[in-house]
Length: 373
View 1 (cartoon, rainbow, N blue to C red):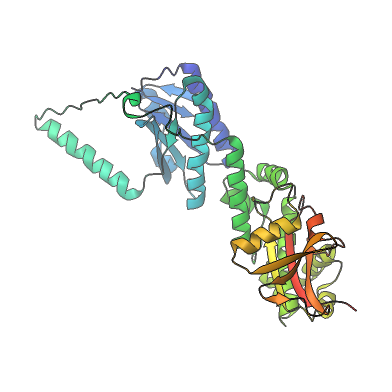
View 2: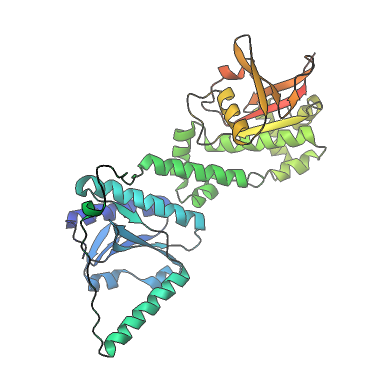
């Protein structure tokens, strides 16, 4: 048994947290402890008989088992039904569950709970083999005992100077989910993307994902996806001769008429008008919003970070007291006839980039083109 003073009410609290996790993620989840507690469906079942009555591995069919430790000692196992659940969702589940347990237990008991990566098939097979080996040795009359090792952690660790494990907050978990959602959108921008599909990938309910997406990014989910798609389309319209219906299909629009409608809503032009007016565009850099954008950032701030991160050479100088990019990727202003302009959510502002906040914005594009006469 674990020698921490968890009482029945503590297990009930944990059971509620596990049930909340299961409700939000739509992943059936239970927690079994080595002191014979089963936390399932917001209830606590104690003793092996009750545990066996209320857990059915055959019904789970496919499941992920996460070992759980308290201060380096095995405490129990979290079991998640992983039917139709991606590896990414399983990985994120581990982090979320670890956060939940630490938030509930660390303040009262001053302990650190660790949820380990899910055991794979080979590891489970080795555990079964080892259990069979131990049972066979006992059956042959061999006496097997384990020697508990009690350590004084302070004896081996300077607790005053050693850095302590960082317990992630709920906000960290939310940010991680939004980051995963953005990455999924980026990888699948050329396909149809729905809120429910992305929610399933990051193991959140669609309504909850929609709410935290708006809270963290200050952008509606569907607006973010559409601006990202229209930005891709504008590149293809300006830099290629691909037919408009082909471009629409490439970014997940099954109907060209609907693509045209969304494109005009975002840019003020139809795809044909946009292509006709932008034949002189030579280069486009597209910067989509991610979780590194801060509320205090300007377009100039996020652009500069993007160029630095991607090793894109740039040069800026003050113009009328504002910084201005006059050379990006060795493409520079040319006697006032050609140079860099920028758009925010597919429209061109009339003020310097350092004066435009990214709050509530989805995408920035830097465009090297001929200046209008």
